Image (cartoon, one colour):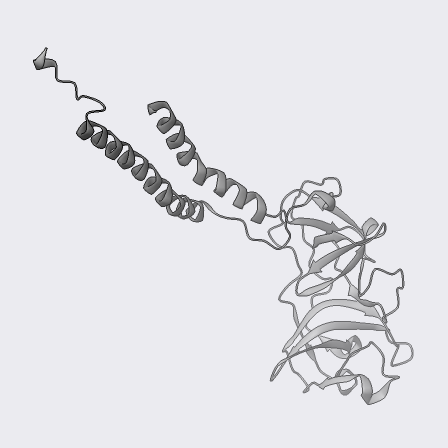
Length: 264
């Protein structure tokens, strides 16, 4: 009987750790990053090899990083870049070990200083007229955050066909394109990310664990163990109490005699 009780106590003691270990394996997920290796890495709207603005947000800044979410097909990864989710060609990025300190080209603001660049549009062209106008930007406004560039309409002959994809912060946040010819205060050239990283092979998304789950830290693990230990201790107490009750009942009925060495 004693050996059975000891066995049950050991099982009860290990039970909380078994539960926590399985919780961690279910909820912990691996986050993968890849460096943008080329100067023509498009952030695509769909995993199709169509390079015009109907399927492209902007060109991703070389030397920065994307978060790899999944393998969309044999040619594309599904990725996150800053606040955007899209697709990038596999041969334009290289997977790295761990996470970079500064993944994205952030906090770059610029200014509009001429009438031609005041329209924020849903596509990098004026040919669609007012139907593509998202917002009208006041002159000399600096509430414009740069994300990337794309080739679009050459609005003025002999000038440029480059448009900026940006966020305009006003009564709310607006996203779209502005014609770059009359924008300034943006660094030229754009800053590079010189962070040293270790490159690795492409991740096998088929073996990843539950996506978008949060890992459990040490303090949370300790709390879970403490909570789960309570029923285990109650279980042990009930076993020991039940054993004592049975023994007392047998003593009272004379089935067993309590041993007293002074009576011998």
